[in-house]
Image (cartoon, rainbow over all chains, first blue to last red; front, side, top):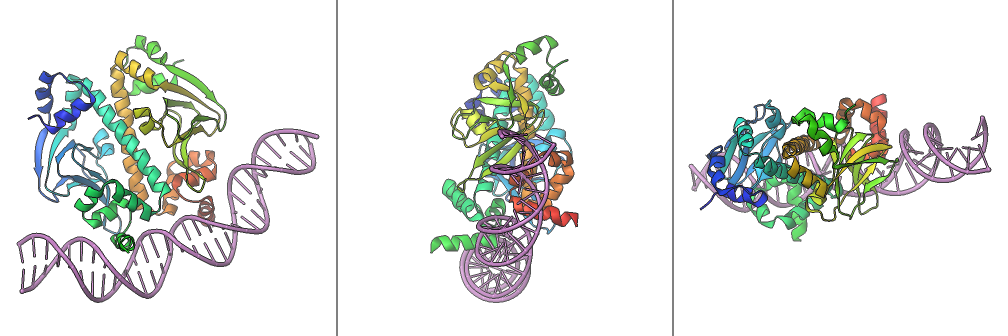
Amino acid sequence: MQSALQQHIQKFVSIPEEDMSGILAYFTPMHLRKKENLLVEGNVCHSNYFVVKGYLRMFYINDKGDEKTIQFALENWWMADYDSFSHQKPGLFSIQAVERAEVLALHYQAQEKMLQQYPLLERYFRLMHQRAHAASQQRIRGQYNLSREDQYLNFARRYPEFVQRVPQYLLASFLGFTPEYLSEIRAKKRS
Amino acid sequence: MQSALQQHIQKFVSIPEEDMSGILAYFTPMHLRKKENLLVEGNVCHSNYFVVKGYLRMFYINDKGDEKTIQFALENWWMADYDSFSHQKPGLFSIQAVERAEVLALHYQAQEKMLQQYPLLERYFRLMHQRAHAASQQRIRGQYNLSREDQYLNFARRYPEFVQRVPQYLLASFLGFTPEYLSEIRAKKRS
DNA sequence: CGGGCCTTTGACTGGTTTCAACTTCTGTGG
DNA sequence: CCACAGAAGTTGAAACCAGTCAAAGGCCCG
């Protein structure tokens, strides 16, 4: 059976079958326990992570000391603090496995080498970032357009399984409001 | 004198000098009047735009009928509705020149051809999107962390010349609040 | 079975929006 | 070059969305 990553890459670019093992060799598989950290705020983001199983979240800690989750990465998504990763300088985000998870880590230098050896992958990563860029534009649009309440309702309609899977306080943090308010919205919806 | 685009590309990848004219041939230079549209909501975003002079904004019109600006593109930035552009399907954004502007338009098919002919440019665009992705992460962080008032003060500190250049109602729309409130903030700051 | 974390509920507060009226600026035509 | 109309910016009052704080209830896991 071929890896999830391999399948994913083939969806976007056509890599000769025989190159695949060479490519996969650049990655380090990691098993993470619940709440295990991949990156801690203030450190350099050395790797770009591909999620095979479970899911990750990216967050930071604000002045008041509470965690704000700004992004999740589900199966088949990439995650990194790209400001930190791109310049290999200390960053402002932490990355953590919410549930027990499996990821493939691609170290910065490994990525550079890999891209030299297999330039076709530049296209793959270009498409990944372009897609993320598109997603950001849509997300920002949603944030401007909808009240917090509608953002939740929208999100719940679009990702019903995920809403079940994620703890409410994380979801609230991701949607940009307090757990108390989320609770209120849910109560209103029930009635 | 070499074009702004050429200089910009050379900052990120090393393209042989003799390839440059071939590359530039894929672009269509455009002169835009103030408030001229490059893209209207509901249409397919056929081109990716590089700003040579002046600046663009991307916006949409909400239920109440007012325009929400979600992004600006200054000199040396790229702009497109990437969800629409990537899939060549109708999109949710309009793009407009705020001032009189010059841009280089890269048509979707032209871009694909160009990337086939000069695969090194995949890297260039990968870096552009990665950078935009990084910027989105930072921007979202700012939106979670700061009150609207602080977002303005922050922005004004970081881009003082731009705050002068852009009309206030656009800036308010971009920062996600009403022109009236921006006015109030500025009044408070003066006193 | 117990402790701690998560969720719910309610009262109070304040940042931000809305609406409407007024002032200032800008550009265009006479 | 002035006049004027429309656009952009300001001000203030009322309403509301959402945050904060505190306390109680539910539930998972050791």
